[in-house]
Image 1 (tube, rainbow, N blue to C red):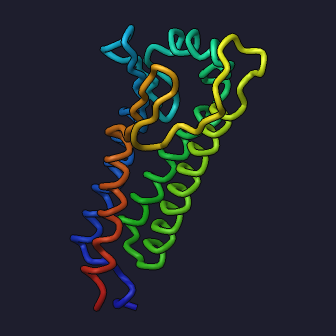
Image 2 (image 1 turned 30 degrees about the vertical axis):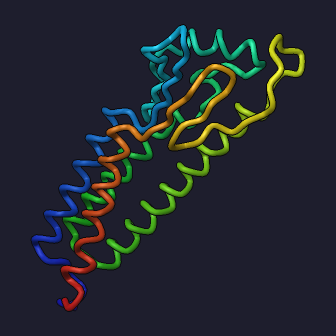
Length: 188
């Protein structure tokens, strides 16, 4: 029975992981910056786990010309519940730190991985939807496109840069902290 318990140090790492998950919700998870000659400073769409920020009205006004649907919280229903999922993940991680059972740690790692995969899938699905469902009656005709999750893309005279936000980096660090006890306590 003793061999199935996590060490105290591993438990502290899990508690720190839970804190990083909570901290992540206060920072952007992802952002896209649009650059053009008329906007050299860039226009932002910033995605938090519960809201969108940035110069969304300006971006929507420009996207109207190519027939792209508006970016809005209504088009991202995930923003209504993602914050609660992240808080739930932090609570489960903290409970695992307190109970210190390896089986629970495996479950948390699996859950974290599944949520990460679903998050990437959801974002890629949304980007594809926005870039390929262009209104054929739009004033400016362009070929459908899919903005990248990471990196840059050029559409007409706009160059977009897509990048992870600090919140995502906190989540990556939290996940790494979950993995350390697997190695550290491998003989326990």
